[in-house]
Length: 255
Image 1 (tube, one colour):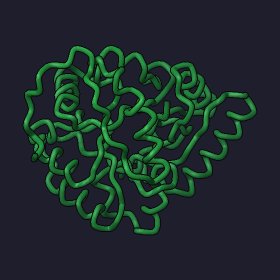
Image 2 (tube, helix red, strand yellow):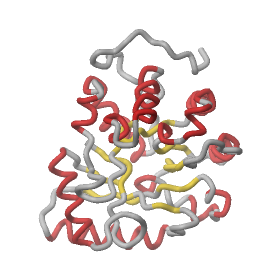
Image 3 (cartoon, helix red, strand yellow):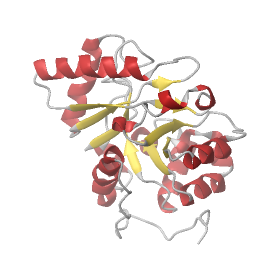
């Protein structure tokens, strides 16, 4: 698997405090079947990280992975708070893409109102950036207005749901909305959003199974993230049904 969203770098945000913690997280990722892990530290007002720092730490952790013979490829990236986007210089923003490519992982706010979210994302698209929206199921504003999310997807945005959301790690409301997004075909990727090896682990496989999403697993965790890292077009969703899928009930998307 390719995990597009993790907080594996040490001492840079709310992930591991030390490089030993980073290695523990990496070992857990390999045990779960991940072969490529994208380091996506927060870039926000609280954690104003820059591309240079991220690149340096990716190199340092990557060197230790090789020394410890941990079979995991580490790639650079960032989780950019939507509220921080307007403050980032264009030259810096272009260096924060997932795997160094054109796709930006954008974090929506954890608020009931997200005024300007769609406008900011559309501005990125107009500037030829591509957007992966991180854990939309955990954004109260998008739960209140799922048509905003559907409209952005129609315009080229893709979504990355956190694996733990599928099993209720963030509460029943989040889980129900995540499953509704699956039913509405508004999920393109499932990532771990790991912060450590135990409390917020890099687990994806069991969560996909629990949600009945195994038939889509290869597309969600290999084909789509591989295209993102390569800067290529997202492959079409395969014509397979989730295990135990119900008749489609949601009409958020335009047809």
